[in-house]
Each structure stands twice: as C-alpha cells, then as structure tokens.
Image 1 (tube, one colour):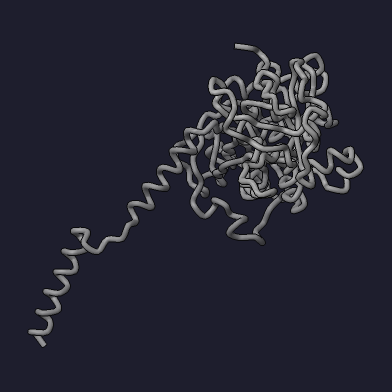
Image 2: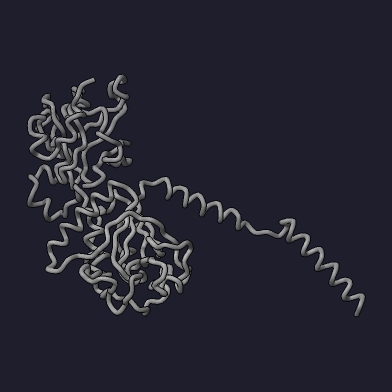
Length: 365
C-alpha cells in the first residue's frame, strides 16, 4: 500500500508540474485576448455615456437594452457620499446613492433626445423618491451627465417635457459625481429572472424595441407588377427581360448636358455626365459608375458571345454591358448602357429633385 501511495505521489507531482508549466493548458488566453480586442474596438467607436436613475434599476436597465443604438448597459449606484457602497448600505438610506443605469449608446444610431423622451415614459417624473412600489431616496429619478454638451441637451429636453405635467417635475439634471458598479447579481437581472419584479409596465419593453427602427433604404427594388404599370414597354423589356434597345435610336446616346443618370426602376444614382464619353457605339457610354458598389457584373453567354452584363445592385435591373475598349486615360473600360434603363436629371434640376448632394461630382478637374 505504501509503495502504491509513493507511485501515486510521483504521478501527482508530475501532473502538478505539467499543469504549472503549461504543458496541458488549453487556448483560453487566446479567447481572453479576442475579448480584450473586441472591448478595445468598442472603446474606439463613437460611443457616448449617459446615466439614468428611474426607480428600481432592474427594469430601467432592461428597458434601455431594448432600444436600437444602445450598445451597453450597467447598473450601479450614483451620486452618493461614500465609496464602493454595497446594496445593503444603499438601501439603508445613509449613503445618498441613487439606483442608476449607465447607458452606452451610438449617437449615429440613436439620439440622446429620444433616449430622454423614452425614459420619461417609464417613470412618474413628479414623484419624489418613489417609483411603483419602491420608496426611498435610492429610487429618486435623475439624468446625470459628464459633459457640457449633454448638460444643455438634458436640461432643455426635461424643461420641454415638464410642460406636459400639471405638477412640478422632480427629475434631477445634474453632473455625475460618482458611479459604482452594483453587485453581479443585479446586472441583467430581468434577463436572468424573466419573472422578476419590475415597476415598468411590460408593454413598454415592446414599445422600446420599436421606438428606433432601422431607417428605410432611400432606394428599394420595385415589384414587377408595379414596374409593368410604371415603365414603358421598352423600359420594362430592357430592365426586366434583358432586352436591348436600338443604337442611335435611344434617348441619351447623344446627351451632352451636365447631370446625373439614375436607375429608371428605383431612382438610385448610377452614373454622372463627367464620366460619359462619345464611343461611337450608339448607346450612352461611361468610363465608370459613381461607385462599383452600385452595380453587379455577371458573365453573359447569350447570343453565342462571352460578355460581362451590368445590373443595378439595388433594383436588379439590366443596364447593359461593360467592355475593355474604353479610353485608356479614363481607366480603359466602357460601360455601354441602355437609355431605357436610365433617367437623366439635368444639373439645374438635381437640387429640387433630391440629388443635390451629388452636385460636387460634376465639378470638372
């Protein structure tokens, strides 16, 4: 038995040594590094912070997590008079802290004014130290900011919203003095405990999901039924049935005015007059589209030829073909495009027809 114990001791010693030296380590450090890199990327983004106290922070955090553009939340204790408070100390009403949610948001996706407006829907802004069934100074309401720009927005928006109430609004609008992260079990509480208490009416969570929808694309593919009624027979044949109009007998082959050429099916800009040139082929010819991302190029083996078809990416409309016999000083390509696939907007009309931002493209260099 003693010998067995000695052998086992030796084996155990080898195992401990191997573990300590990293012989049997998995690649967990790589995972940690990836996580750190993701956090670094997030930190480098144009992310802003604002702090909302709205009663019990479980519901307030869950509410803000539903809003598109909010990229992170954390519950904690703000604007108190001690350091590193515990939950028990906060609820003792001796520390002056308010249950608060740190909201990180992308201002390119959601506006601070919208966040404030939505926040007001979750509270009674005229109630002091009470929201729902929760009472105490830790449940007071407030919006805490960290810079002068946000201060102006917060105070202005709260003053506007206050006009909708008959009683004084008691929401604090003051700078953030301090903020301490709450205990782990408080973080994402309603995600971990879906049936947990919340002073916010459940329907408001659904409202928050829909409050900041993705903007509709400026240009969208049209249904073929709609196009059948909207387009001429030739325009439909060319764009939807890969037809080809006659050379020298189409609308824009000899158009020389300044302007922009848009997809006849969607209105999306595709080409500009400064890239148009006379190729002698009898169709509008361009050295390039506005950007390559606006078009799709596909191999076309119809009519016993190998050609590269050009289609609009958004509208999926047949435009024409691209060839390699264009002017060398312009890149060597010739986008041979059917007039029936295009609508020309003269320079003088671009502003009024919604294409004003493309006017700089017409500046000749």
